[in-house]
Length: 334
Image (tube, rainbow, N blue to C red; front, side, top):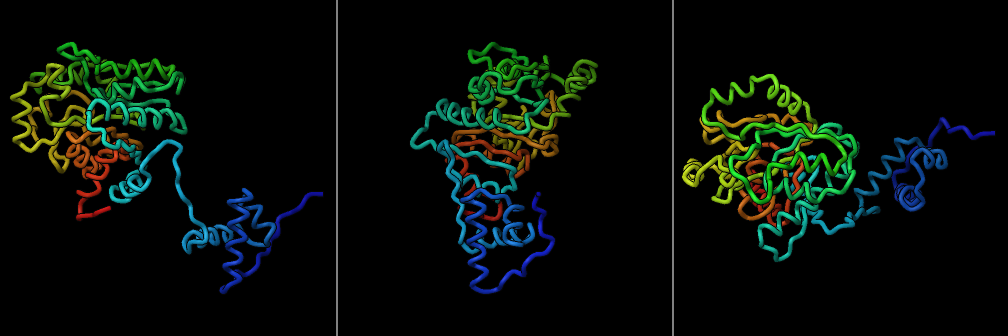
């Protein structure tokens, strides 16, 4: 003989008995790991009433939930970033007194790799940018983290000059570690003329790659600061004079090879017209746009990306996170 759920429920009390009931429900749910349906059945309540009591228990302080990540993270900063910038998620890693840019990249890259490998449900298609940060993330990914994954570059990456870190080989490494396949965009990031970019993007092969890239529900990208250490300079696309000129025009860095100002607006239309790849607007339309950034040199580009809504997930270091919080629109403070 099986028990059948009760169809009636008690009326929730309004005095001390209600607090007693909240404690009872909270103990059953959190300590005894009973389901809300089981609790409702046992106490003669509805599932709605159980859920309401649990909510009130948290609001009144009867239940206190403390987030204690297994790996050291700055949960308070993460929550504040999500609140201020309406983010889907934020990962903030502590860095202590570390100031070395390369070490910061590796630390944040490890956190990003852990987050990406833990995505659930596992994506079938993932868009990627390239660069030093994304190359570091690729090196940190575990083996066979997503068999069958198709990764695709979302902006041109064929370097004009060989670099020691192979910053353009991100898609291949992502695919190899995942146990999947890579679709490359074997064209320059920046070309000499707007007409050349238009001709390239109209080519059936390039057009097919970009069309597939636009379908990715997850896009992972790094952000470049505005300095002579820019990967676009070391790869041969820009000169030091180009970087200086962009900075004079208000550029704070680049995303997908597109240079923006503090509000996320393109600073050089002519240069943008020669840049091959998805437009920045696509990031706003993507279900999960994961921006990965670290270091003082990139504080302003991180803030600009947040203000412009180019990302829904931020993975960064605690100093960059604090900068973004302290300089949030409206003068918000932690």
